[in-house]
Amino acid sequence: AQSVTQLDSQVPVFEEAPVELRCNYSSSVSVYLFWYVQYPNQGLQLLLKYLSGSTLVESINGFEAEFNKSQTSFHLRKPSVHISDTAEYFCAVKNPQGGSEKLVFGKGTKLTVNP
Amino acid sequence: GAGVSQSPSNKVTEKGKDVELRCDPISGHTALYWYRQSLGQGLEFLIYFQGNSAPDKSGLPSDRFSAERTGGSVSTLTIQRTQQEDSAVYLCASSLKLAVYEQYFGPGTRLTVT
Image (cartoon, rainbow over the protein chains, first blue to last red):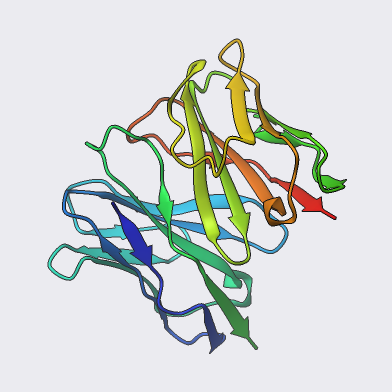
């Protein structure tokens, strides 16, 4: 069975600082990986995804994540955060050959960007 | 276009009562998913539908939980004899098809069992 570990439940940073939100997964097979974001009082939105190909994927608002198969990681990074990036971020995994379409989520990381 | 909608947005019910939660997926989306978001457990998969059939019900916590989908569109999640541990935000998502397509999430229904 797959599982996702987000080691940091809360990450406070100052505006314009870099940030890394960590995500590790366990799976014995190939996986699809996702980062979802939940802004305060809003629903979940897909931030970026890795399905195949280039291991570095980017979002339109400056976030990027790198799939590292040997370390079974998919950490999310941004070189300079804004106040508006304050949100909860969820890493998720799906097994494309597992016969199920369910996403397995980590417990989330609350990013708070302070002025 | 219209996104995934869920109703009610909030539901407070007494322990032991039955509740029905509704999800309207994005028009044309064939796949529909239910998840539960609670403080202690994070986001948990409950069930998904392809059309009107549910290939994976493995996430339903007990036989008090059931879901159906009719006409390949609206889905209802029913919880019978609610318990306090059922209190959570119930999220619905839909996707154009299965496999690589993005899941679009609704705003959720916050269920409080008193």
